[in-house]
Amino acid sequence: MIDTILERIEKLRTEKKLSLYQISRKAGLSSKTMYNWYNGTAVPTIPALEAIAQILDVPLYTLFMPDDAATPDNQTVDLIAKWDKLTAAQKDIIMKVIESYL
Image 1 (cartoon, rainbow, N blue to C red):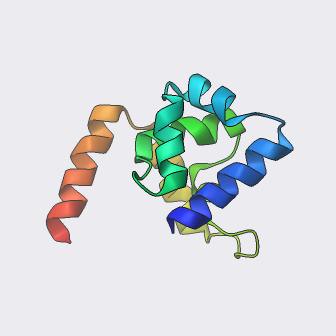
Image 2 (tube, rainbow, N blue to C red; image 1 turned 45 degrees about the vertical axis):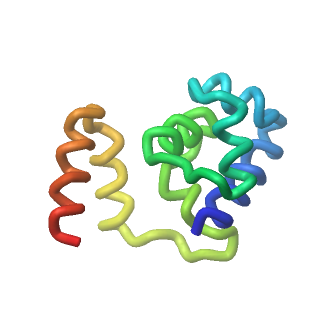
């Protein structure tokens, strides 16, 4: 999954002619953080991916899908759109609830 996310980020940032450095700065991340993702010593957080998706001007779910994947169904798109409207505190609460069920 992480490889898919990083491949998507790479493809989209290349299309937009942005460097990893530019992405990291605009997302408020250190260059080392992103370097660690690509080296496999760390994984991106959802807030970091949300920031990157905004910079790349794509919905968050796009980063999780390989190029040949089908478009998500309407329920998934609706869920993601609603997620994007939540505050950071609301997202934290929801993540805790989800984690309690897993």
